[in-house]
Length: 198
Length: 198
Image (cartoon, rainbow over all chains, first blue to last red; front, side, top):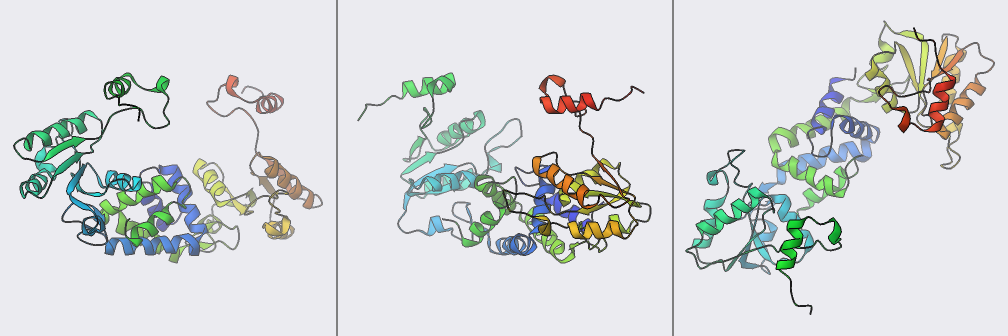
């Protein structure tokens, strides 16, 4: 019905997370209607990003420079390393603006179901990073899922003979959350980890 | 925090319908991760679409040719013209594969609130198209909103001295819909427009 250029565009847009076939068509139409305001700038931005983006050889972050701007930042504490599953998690922690260390992106979690073993993750480079002796604390910021927790325990086990302190994110009531809507596991964790009211 | 190329990409993606700032960031990350499978093909598809797409001078459809593939199709009944608000509505009707006439895209509806008058829509070209005498029936397929209905009545009024038959889409129970969940207005319309069970 439409030209092949439109159909190709819709098919590619539908592969983005959050866009299905229907919303991809709507997005394509919006792009075509705003050719100079949206379509051409987006095409340019994509091309520039494709040319500029590299994976950081130290931590695995995606940035326009290698080492990435986080690893290259002199004001950061390089002895404090936060281990995350994915670049998206790194960006999420950066948005809090409360972490002043550096990162290590695993690139996934161990998963028996999906057949992902330690060799599929950046675990070897993490162990090596710790073995060099310049890491003081490793914050395991993996998802609080079964696979995430399994991976946390695996990493802790691999590093049990190293002097690196290993910590994990706190479990508890989300800020702004209501107890009545909270699952039992989280509520129990929050109760066990209760702290003095300062 | 990220390079300017990533931020520019996120900002542009967030302008697409269906993507907010958060999902745009997720989409950008997905694109960056699949550089060769997704990012570069999308950049190419956008550039090709920007170069190829034109607005049809007969009906206002967006296509890679002018007149568009609908207007240029010899098997279609050119005396049967469907009036739609937007190119998205044209595509929606085309997807039903049940309409064998041609289209006229108004480019919006009359709206007192948004200050859109007849001069802002492609009404003049529609009246002219009807005056040329080659239109037999005009199907008003505008949204069943106040603005859509106002526009329908305005067009019918403009063409009241012309011999063109003016019809509108049927109102009724959506196929697969349950009466209990239907609003009263639609149910009443469906009741009034009841038809013999064939």
